[in-house]
Length: 209
Length: 257
Image 1 (cartoon, rainbow over the protein chains, first blue to last red):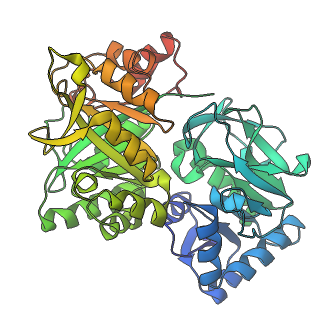
Image 2 (cartoon, rainbow over the protein chains, first blue to last red; image 1 turned 90 degrees about the vertical axis):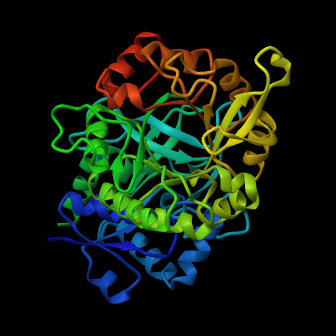
């Protein structure tokens, strides 16, 4: 079985990401163990809650450098596949208006801004994900592709080429997924998106194998 | 696109679903895990488990139910009933719940809302409000907040309490009309609309659903972001898929089953 390290930095519900990966056949470990993370074929950075506390918790767990290095190598295409989820996607960028003083990992350029006032926040619903590139993660996804979102802030990527999927919520181009090399991240929660989410995680697992 | 959610609610005690369930093709219709999987397959957008017992033994049973559900069902799960502290919330979240619903505990000590929100994020702090008209003959008196299944009145006004709960960090309001709960007469649309238009966070309408058109009304007339129902789904009268078809036919954006 393919070993996937789900970075454990003590926030919220990390179990569901691990369980969903197990469900699609991964040997998924919720871990902060550097050796185990080094041995993994793929790395997952989940995230729930606010941006600043997540960055702080990642640092407190001693995982900031490891996350940065793994994500950077993946972005360059010569590392292991890496998947950020929700705040785990936002953390890959430079920062967030949610916690302006907190530094993101800065693997990808851009920052998160508040969703428009014209819609309820958080976006807490299923929405259609429009895959703008032929992402490997989107293989075998139905059209329309529904996924579950929970967020009030959304990434505004500096480079359009990093955006792999969008959804419409208050504005038409909310970043729903990003991709560079074998670095992927989703604003939605694949581990909470039933069949479609499990299929996406299966695609990620296949990329790791 | 803003889409409405359909949320079946399961009342659970001692690890079993109560309010008799009537799915002929389930091996064990009283098993919350099996029922949750069934609703997921039918296209439920989220699930709510309401722990209607209060003893500490039952609490451990509920944790086990949540953990077993999280192994098999991959849609959002909210757990309510008896959650009083950040530690209670943490236990449920670590077991696999995505959100916790606070009701009486938030009324007794509103600080718990901000404690849960700051520890785990506003998105997992749901505040459940049980509201009842103060005087049906004097609508201007509005709705009061009740506890203990609508038996015990508080001094709180439902709209003011909802606004305060959101200010303290609630990311969502689960609004139940105690006047309508169990009547099958439909949601209290006036109440739903009053709360929904006063807030900028999602509102789940609950209490009174007896037929599918009530779900449509909850969204279109009540302004609800999500609709919750129990018995119409449990008794097999309607499937979640049928509910969504009815809503879509009425022009509401929903995720198809």
